[in-house]
Amino acid sequence: MSVEVILYAKTATKTGLVRFLKDNSFRKAKHFIEEMNTPEMLGFMWFGVEDYESSTGVEATVYRATIEEKEKYKCADWVLHTRTRSSGSYEDKARQNDIIRKARQQFGGTFYNDWYGTNRYTNLSDYEKFSPLEKGVSIIASNSLEKLSHIKDCLNGYENELSKTLSNVQPDIVRSFLVTKDPSIVLYNALMPFLVSVLEYFYGQCFANFIKYDETAKALLIEEKVKIGVADVVSIFQKENSLEQIITQSYNFQNIDSINKAYKKYISVDVLSILSKKKKVNGKVFRVLTKVQEILDARHRFVHELDINYALTKKMYLGYVLAIENTIKLTVEAFKTKGLTIDMDYHK
Image (cartoon, rainbow, N blue to C red; front, side, top):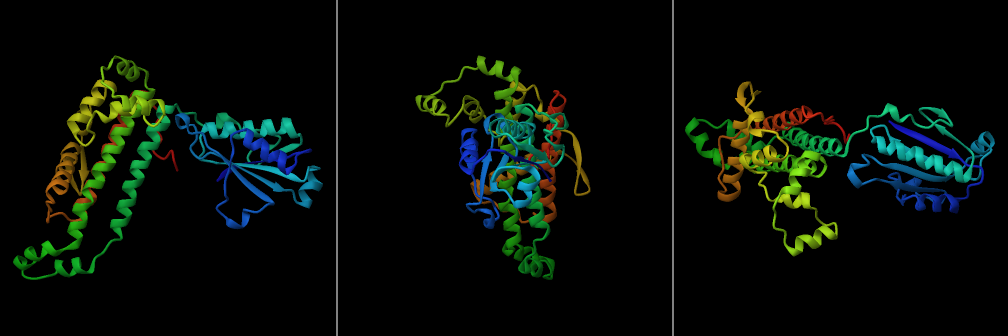
């Protein structure tokens, strides 16, 4: 679903509308339907990147008015159509309102909002406004969970004929030998680093956002004594890097103790305590922390020693996926106790 607002201007020309959009930071963009990329229909896009301003952006199209539109609205030959997705951020909706308001002031005419009616701007109070920290953590958490969902979808539909044949070999002693030839087991072992990557991404990027936007964390960052090389200083000035990312890189987010040290110091969140809670995995109750440590250890052995756990099954691997999901959800709940509003479906 989306919010579409169309300005039927009185005096607009194609050139005038195009110049207007470019002057207001809209960039030329191709429509995903190739047939709509014509001289009679020009697409543009605005997307705010600072402080997670946009989640979907604002689309704009300059197109030639139909005969019916010209008769109904007494408008010029060219029309300005804007669109934000219903999942767009508060700032996206505000930007859509602003561009229509400015266009109407410059070109006159009337506009129609398909949710609110004729000459009615979008009611921004209908949309929740998140802080940059809340948006950042929401995007990181939802992206992490989405990637875990993708790997589950792949494995749930995965079958290998050779693996199936080997699992039915008799007697057991022969099967236990042939299991070393099972390609599926190698696959599940090879996917353990993926889980660690999700863990590292989630904790590392959430940490970077806290020390950038949280006032308490920022105050601690100011007191931090960190030696920064000339190359890092140059990269900061050129906006290729940031102080927050440099501090983040000084911690190992593939190590639970290092994660806990960073989070306790800057965010007052005890990750070890959070993950000590018990959850049900594959019908058995385990401490989440225990499962996470198993994943980290397995990844280390696989990456550095090419050690294969031949007892690892699809069911076991999906249990590890669930453990990482629980890790993210438990940590997000801890963030919420600090007064943050986190939407783990924010980017959808």
